Length: 185
Ligand code: IMP
Image 1 (cartoon, rainbow, N blue to C red):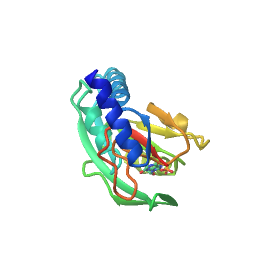
Image 2: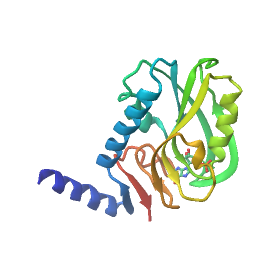
Image 3: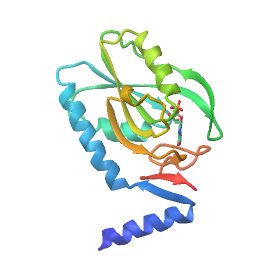
């Protein structure tokens, strides 16, 4: 009962903020557990380096790595292509990883793949560093017919073609701390 009151409070709070909740905190946690389990099995005995794309992936990555039952290293890089919630079409590397990944098994962690431009750019960039393997885990994939779905090895959820926020994703710097994923109205 307390849980369902809490759910109502969260939903009503979201509506007041002009958000439609698409994926609840509980659904995300269940999915993260499942993804971490698969990754744990697939990377047994490997030299796993989890690379997060800042800033959007930091919440997802923090939850994910804590459920992967393997020794692993973390690194980050930062790219920017959005300006005030709109894609500029140009992917700019703001900073790169700090450790070499040659010969290591790299898992790139994204918050959302939309047009796929960022992902395509990052895969090319990482391949040049000669990792032993390179795979992609993304919390979200936006249905825009970009044709890059097959580049995502571990996917959380597919979302409709709306601007989404929460669980690390922002709109002009806000909403990253929401425990759910919601669409802006
Ligand atoms: P892409 O290059 O169009 O695939 O966009 C990828 C990046 O744009 C993501 O890593 C996000 O940072 C940002 N992005 C794209 N769509 C959204 C959205 O709906 N909400 C928040 N950020 C988004």
